[in-house]
Image (cartoon, rainbow, N blue to C red):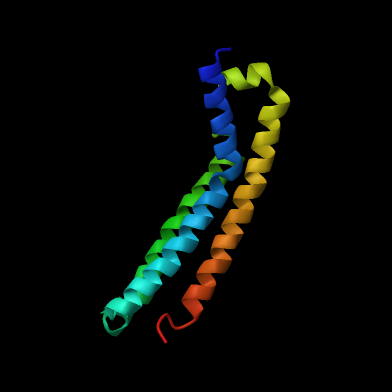
Length: 127
């Protein structure tokens, strides 16, 4: 196997392991960045869908990340996120490891995203 293919397979395995946590970190940063920007811009006085503007924006950001992580977890559990064929030929135990640990870490990231979002949704965004 060439080194270019080998490095590509390793990066896919790394994405499988860390991808869910990267999405959670993205959600965390975007939620708190949007909260700061929305509060400083005075969006809490505007109403969208019966809630203040900052909360509506935060809910949309949170929902997008939840759907992304939920879809990722469902895809991995159904086996559609297969490792490339070359990886399975050279190291089936590595592919199985990436699959199992990737599912667990994506589940952890989904729970962390739910927890982070509930904290943002339950408290008033601007004090």
